[in-house]
Amino acid sequence: MNTTLLADIVEISKDDPVAFTFFTGYMVMFAASVFFFERSRVDGKWKTSLLVSGLITGIAAVHYYYMRDYYASTGTNPTALRYIDWTLTVPLMCVEFYLLTKPAGAKVGLMWKLIVASAWMLVAGYIGEAFTDGTTGYSVTWGVLSTIGYVYILYTAWFGEVKQLGDASGNPTIVRGIKTLAWFVLVGWAIYPIGYMCMPGGWLNVGLGWNSSNVDLFYNIADAINKIGFGLVVYNIAVSDKQPQTATA
Ligand SMILES: *C/C=C(C)/C=C/C=C(C)/C=C/C1=C(C)CCCC1(C)C
Image (cartoon, rainbow, N blue to C red):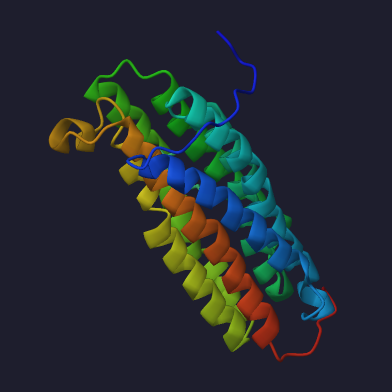
């Protein structure tokens, strides 16, 4: 197998919306990173959170750079690059939850539980995509296993430790911000399993005839919404928080 990266891009075909989203995705991730890295508008205690937001979109930008070329030259899903990107960026989103709840007493264990759940979700998803035999049984089994990790993060953000510590902070800006992030996890992250189900054997593939090129369409749109959206929520918390700097920051 040829793993070198990769031929020059000649053109984007006008009937290839997937290629279009790869190129746009790269550029918006890049632009968002510049925005988040410029941290002079926020208080000292929020600078780390903004840095992490910029790292999330920055890591994504680099992967999109390679994924768009991969897609443009092969026309196939850049599954490995996709999952390498997620394996780095989703744990960093878990770090954001930890940083937001740390002033209210979050322990580092909370961060690790979320990271382990996200790793579980992604490893199962990767096995489900990369090694699929095209059967529904295979696709659904690994999809369901992956969903266990997803539901754990969802629960923690909506009802569990993240929600409780947010409330305990007594800071309305943080309570509202965590609520918004929880909505992102519920609605924005739910786009990914929709993409997954377009894989051979997946329910949307079998049921509606959606195919592998839809996978990247869903993933690219979801990434832009979630990675930039998450960062903007954190940015918004940082600029609207009027509470004095805490000792833990
Ligand atoms: C920046 C990247 C993000 C936020 C990626 C999130 C990915 C998911 C929430 C993926 C979830 C999946 C399932 C819940 C089941 C099917 C397999 C996955 C991995 C697509």
